[in-house]
Length: 149
Image 1 (cartoon, helix red, strand yellow):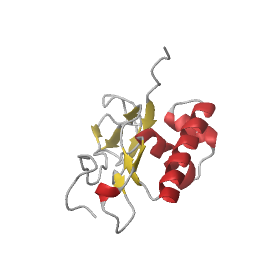
Image 2 (image 1 turned 180 degrees about the vertical axis):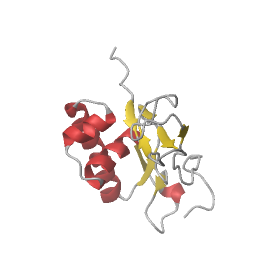
Image 3 (image 1 turned 135 degrees about the vertical axis):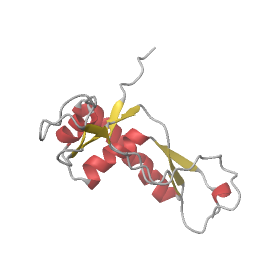
Image 4 (image 1 turned 90 degrees about the vertical axis):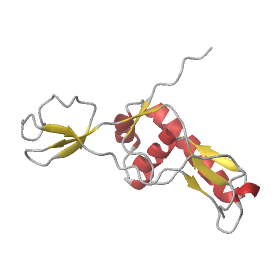
């Protein structure tokens, strides 16, 4: 039996968690499930333009693992675009990176530090949790939602 996958670091949750072709009723669409960590790999590599080593370090996985995650994500997105399927972003082995804010200097950063740690920019101990941008979140109720086009 294989061991469970290591939880990958994700900096932000996606703004939307469902995409579909315009003009096609959701009830008639097949869907591809893209995990949150696969979307994060695409964001780091394709949107931010980082190389594999930097992206893997940000997600705290090895380069070969990052490459496998990214390859799976690209395959799923290409399948959805070519075949006209919906894309649902859901699940995966990930943990959300903490986002911190220093009230003294106004600095904001992502890491897994505790709020009791001093600010890495000014050394002050006035650290608070910053809100993680989540956007509008929807619960997926299956392929038979009414009124969605």
